[in-house]
Amino acid sequence: MMLEAETSATQAGAPASLSQGLPPRECGGCTLCCKTMSVWEIEKPNNVWCRHVRNHTSCSIYETRPNSCRTFNCLWLRGVGTDAMRPDRSRVVLVEAEDEGGGPKGIAAILDPTRPLAWQEPAMRGFLEQVRDGYGAVGMALGTRKRVFRAGQPLQTP
Image (cartoon, rainbow, N blue to C red; front, side, top):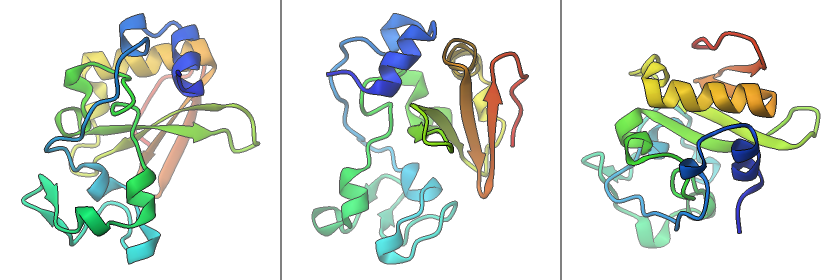
């Protein structure tokens, strides 16, 4: 079953290979969400490494990790994007995001604060532009700074 955001991305003109029929993936050594995302259960703020990450490649409490960690799946894990768009390679975590007004879900790019311009790499930028223009909007977040870019608006680091 395809995610609503994936369906929207495909309808938005995103390349079909990014979202159609790909099996779920595994994190492997990727832990970028352990840096960019907050985890309320362990009072971990966004944009700092989780104290449980070992060598930026694994979780020391994986078997007993908080529920929000257990249930989080970035869009790359769900089959969206190429291998080069894996978060530890692209330095961008793609997530499903709801419209602030309660509208349909879309895609947001969570940027690594140590590489805030990584979204400008051709594959990632092209994907974000296709989502923005075809779906009508794409979000981007860098720390507490967030922006939504509507169709036709130039993308820029928040």
